[in-house]
Length: 491
Ligand code: NAP
Image (cartoon, rainbow, N blue to C red; front, side, top):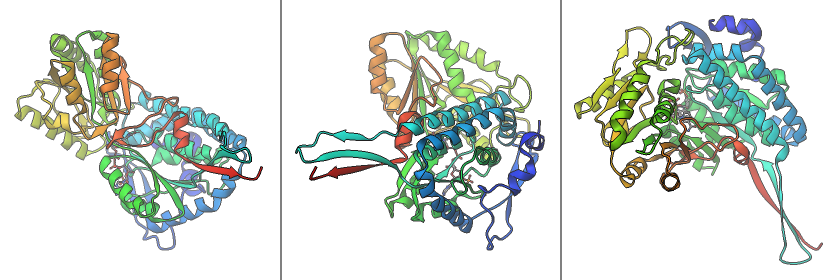
């Protein structure tokens, strides 16, 4: 099903762009510029949207600031009820949202449905957490005093999201902010603004008051980012995307010591020890590497396999990878959709070429498919070393480089030898080894005998240059709350 059909079925395309209060209006100064959204699988034009800039961002921030105190003052139970309605509407419209997502981003429809339900699970979680913003009391050092802490929303939050999970990133950012009592302004990625728009349609239906949720469409993130970071009415920036842009936003926020939550890039190691269950490790690696065609911040970027099991793992892994079908996300049985654009393909090709020039070997795949669209074969490389580009940089594509290793010390040192610290995975059975490696890996998240760990119930996020803050769990709510200490004297 194409985008228009999906929208028309329940959401009515006309309403999406014309009647939404939460979509910021082009200002009087708007140049009339627009930008196009394409299906990366077919090149089909999906929509043309107004290309907004600083003036519109300013107006959206003003709307959020005007709504902020009323939203914060709403009883938590009422905020919770609206979030809950939004969750129910997202679930009710899962098929439409998934179709829009597949059309603009390319991922297989089943994965898109999974992502929409994953997004809904964050909204549901924070609908529940909204009612549990507890304070604290402290025993005072003198009898005539009482000391306590209350939690209050940080205020207006500016959020910027990437294209690779265009539904779940929206939910993961704005639902904890809304639960905490913050009004939000969101700028989705240029390539994937439509599912965000559709989720905002549903947010309005759910009953968020005017000005509490605000959406800006823009072809360029930079001017919107500058306005969000420099406008004093915005108290916090929450960003998911590349480490490079995260650094820039953090610098831009420094003038006002603005709070930041940053979910940035990764370079996840996936380690298979010689005591691992090899069949399970192969399945885990397929999931961790090829989900979303490898365009995932927690993708297994480099696969380390201990010498004794290297050949057996590589053989079984190659067999499994050959079974993965590449194609249009709407076709049945497709496991790998297109890359988001031609830049993504060029980076993948450069990584493969660098590996081959330095002695690596292609065990399957290795090439772009056809000349239309942006499809790349699922690829396994062996003979890879830690210094090759494919192991040093985030590839963001369906390339699985296998690196042989000998000792635990060696692999932990190589796994940690990166500026990133988002996710790591390892497979092992020996309990002593499991604890040792889990504690030694310098990552915010470690998957042990699993290739999948994202959940609304757990704190998702990175250390080092992979970010600041967590999304999901009760910790995700804390990121949108300020702590205020009250000291009552003369009691
Ligand atoms: P990106 O280039 O950093 O873009 C992300 C968002 O930032 C987009 O909305 C983009 O808007 C906007 N943007 C770009 N330049 C900006 C600027 N100068 N100021 C303000 N905003 C700006 O990243 P991407 O290529 O879309 O996403 C892939 C990256 O995200 C990977 O590194 C991946 O690891 C990371 N990621 C991390 C997580 C996590 O949870 N840690 C999750 C998903 C993805 P426009 O595109 O409209 O310019």
